[in-house]
Amino acid sequence: MAILKSIKKESLRSQVYVQLKSQLMEGVWKVGEKLPSENELCASFGVSRVTVRAALQQLEILGLVETKHGGGNFVRDFSTIHAMDAFHPLIQINENQDIITVLEYRKIIEKGAIALAAPRITKKDISFLEDTYATMVAYANDAKKHANADYLFHYRLVQIAQNPIVAKVYGIIHVILASAMVDIVDLLGCEIGLRYHRKLIDALKKGDKVTCEALMDAHIEETIQAILRTNKKDSTKNSAK
Image (cartoon, rainbow, N blue to C red; front, top):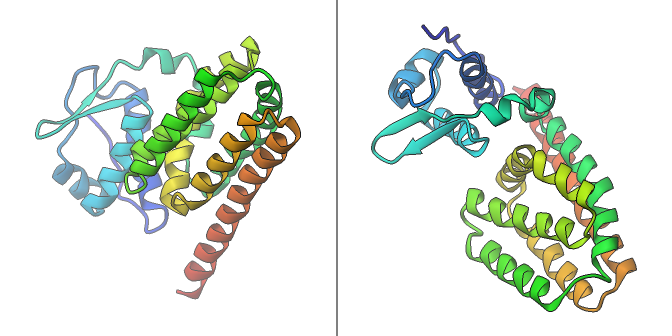
């Protein structure tokens, strides 16, 4: 029997997400089992359907549940994620600070990765990045699909770097990275990402290692600062209530 607690009035989506994730990881609902309906979850948590859907979307991105249109939400086999328990605290995005942590990791890894990629990139790689960028543009109004294309863009850069350790680690924690990317798009929109991705492709075409490094550093740093400003505004609004 699931034990669900009434939700406080702060970070509603995060609180719903954390509780559901905890219940899933503890095996309250078995693989293949259908979760309570959105209406039932709304009543249990005391929140709106929008909040419940946002939390369920987060769980779907992490591979914990599968949403079947018109059929409800079902528990997926996430045994491979169980083996990554050490990373779970990062996935529990209660505050924007967790997104900052992911971005700091990316700033360290991806700046170095693109420096390796610049002299090694091929025309086929450029074509892939152009296609992925076009997908990001096409799905500018769909946070999940846009963020998925964003992740594929950065993952391809890591692969082009041809360092098997860097690529392996990046792939292992893909659920963390992809999850954070969705939240970033939700928070900031697509402008920063699209602007820098265009510049990155152009610099990679020239094999300009120095410019690529500088652009990647600036891309992630601008994103960090934008999130910090958003977080500060939210704190100010809450304190004014």
